[in-house]
Image (cartoon, rainbow, N blue to C red; front, side):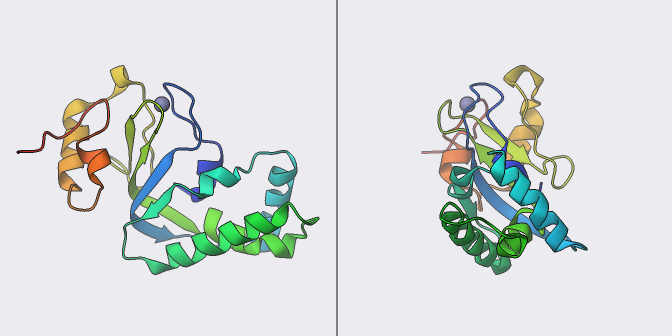
Amino acid sequence: MKPWLLNILACPICKEHPLTTYVLKVGKNRLRDRKGLAGELIAHYQKGVLSEPSLEPVHNFSKDKTFDTRLTKARKVFASLSKQKPEPIDLVPLVDYFHGLEVLVGALRCEKCKRWFPIGSRIESIPELLPDAGRDEKADLTFLRKHADMLPQVIVSDSKPFAVKVKS
Ligand SMILES: [Zn+2]
């Protein structure tokens, strides 16, 4: 999942946006035309597709520090956008974050209805935003147990529809 998708992702149950994102494994995409992609981002920005709030609830728990660096830069660029008429060159740091990175494994959480959703559970980088009835409880619990040491407790044991019971 490219971080760009977070601009438009919403909870499939209650439509809440943005979703909190926990990143566990990161990949990189080689970009051929960063300026061209920046031009596309300007069009997205002008149409209101880009969501500044979606950059905030992103937590990187992988060892990849490039992710943090690019996220920080992207937040700064975004914050400065409203004050100026953007040129494609201004948006290149946003391109590097939105398109140059890939969340291979992670989790999404809706803070409104408290549901969590896996990224890369079956196929790396694919987010699974399914309604409860379409989910595979066994696969979801296996995913939570597999990543329990990296994911926060709020995902592992305090979210719907499936949670790992913590021994007390
Ligand atoms: Zn929700």
